[in-house]
Length: 160
Image 1 (spheres, rainbow, N blue to C red):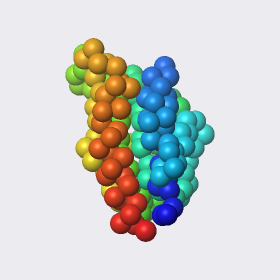
Image 2 (cartoon, rainbow, N blue to C red):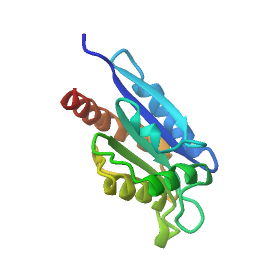
Image 3 (cartoon, one colour):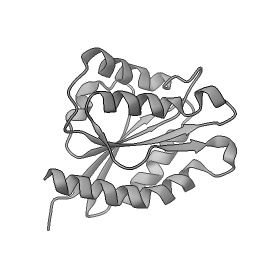
């Protein structure tokens, strides 16, 4: 039997909704073949990307299109240190509200753009959940997560 796929979900949140989404995904994905660990971004730095496996950025947007307060240290550390993340494979599940049209889902977009700029390779499409859509973000995550998990497992197999 091959080693389990490792997924680290990094959560940026102000109200806890992104954390709820991450917990739902962890429950759905964590089995014998996949090991999932959810980490709040509080106090994390760029070194978190030295962990084995793939990453999922699960973040909301706050204020004028900013990353949430608990994600600012990680985002700032990545900007300041500019590590080479060519070995990193990641996905992005962004939460936002389309009524804020000019900054809709910018928290996820900012992380996506920065990670790509540092050489990381995104797995699948960036999700942009819309709070005003009437669909719960954890429902969107469960549906999207099935395909993303397959892509993440393929990325880990290629890296091995």
